[in-house]
Length: 363
Image 1 (cartoon, rainbow, N blue to C red):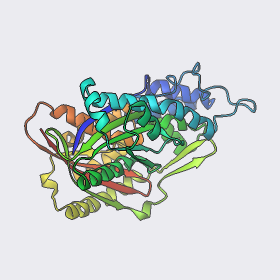
Image 2 (cartoon, rainbow, N blue to C red):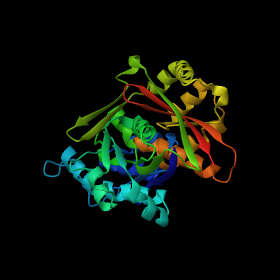
Image 3 (spheres, rainbow, N blue to C red):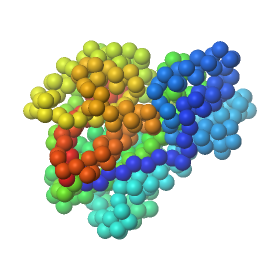
Image 4 (tube, one colour):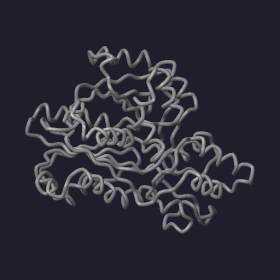
């Protein structure tokens, strides 16, 4: 059961109109192409996003928006990973602190038996897991696991692992920390995939505590996954010389629209449940068109998908962290209610892989 869940954002917020202008300046676009870029960013449906980069400012200490030249090239992957190493720990700590009251931090953190970190936007070793163990004062015997580079559905894999741990040891207390710094992988390119990813990705972090029992939270009912092999190359993630490069085909919404209903029904049958029993859908907002395709395919009412649209509009796509923001919003909405809620949650990632979880809010 997820008994605690907190989220965190970097200090720097940028509106989509500001981001479009900064990208246009970076790419040295003419006036006509700048107008097209601003239209594209506005059409995403995102109002603003957050970044560890200084508000996408030209005065940022990071070299992303300096004029690119032979003497001042665009940041290499190594330079981006150096920024990740500097920025990941404080944002991860913020998410953890937002998950617990001060009194709970004092009482709960020393009892943590397992630590799982999640990220697909940065890696180093000794890594974030050891830094968190030391900075939080966790036991040196805490068992650590790292889930890296699995894309937007990685939080589900972390939750599966945490659930298996608490089912095998009822005294286990598992802390999952998920952090994504997607804006570090900004691309200085007008390739369609790069333009699309530059327009939607953002930074954020989340943390959750999973234990056997609890009085309030999200009870974990079941998991299931599926894969659409015919779309293997339409959503992919590669390490390049200038950051990690996202392949996000414009055909993804159409592929989901054509295949999602049958896939979901198959997974629900494996879970031994029916769509009629689901109160709310918690869909990873990978894009506005993706959310619309999910709604159309599953014939959802707007209210059943409200939390996903809210997160998309206010934060953009934070990769694997994003769906945890959706869960957090639902949890906050339900805090004063006494009725349990059944949640079907889903995220899409490289493959195209569909990861799902059946959760039940109890209070």
